[in-house]
Length: 409
Image (cartoon, rainbow, N blue to C red):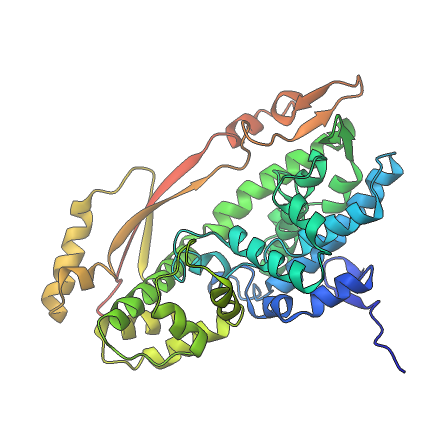
């Protein structure tokens, strides 16, 4: 009987050819849960600012797996023992680390479900897949949860210099065209080593780490926290909030079966059961876009205008400040909307609001990036580097924003 060739090769625009190492990982990639990632945008609504940013979580997951393969090979070459089972565990854990993202990635994380993060949903997916694949993901789950006894393996999945960040910075830089974020991820990986079960970077890689942290800071301010993207994401969360409020008030909204389920339910960590997971697995960007195209013609003033703003890219005005914004600055805009369109104050606040964003490129008190000096000593990157700016990068910077209509609705 003919058998399906499971040793496939993907042609990736960042790294070239990516190989699937074995049939188990092939079957996981082929699974409907993973294939859904083709329909989840990696960077949410950032394509409204950077037109090329249409890459998906599917791209990113494969890229992370590719970098993990390289990291394993580098560490083995340097004498770090990694068994075949541990290799599989690492590859599966990084492949599935983002499988729990909802539509438009982070933009919808707190709108569709409450009090449960995408990491927790990723874990639910992994546990379900583990049942389907007869326990083959048990080690991967242990590494993903940070419980595996070999700490450096958990750091490869989640730390301040993990394979996730090594891929998304380089990939997002490529697709946005923002060259300042382009890091040399392969150079960083080549400099990795393990000392006393901790992941370290050899001293000759210190400048690559410095570049990595500077690039990370730049990408957050210039791309991930770009004010236009921020305004669009805030609108998207408010669309779901308004839709849920209308549905709870008895209004019938046209939406896909999966989206309707979450509009009609208040799902939190406790109520996120197997049935909810199954329905969540059918939810992607297309459900939201389709709903917005329908809702832009709805007779509810708030919902229709919010949807039109995103679909037509006619967004709210957004201003960033270094100081907290006083409520009085918003009141004038709110009162104008209330008077002009006969809205309630609550309705007007969908279009006028404030918030804050924080950027900290390096958290010196959490999962440090350690440098292995030629003397054999291990030092934190900030202490090992002669780059004064790294101390500044380890301090959180907070900015405040306000959004309001730039013209009549």
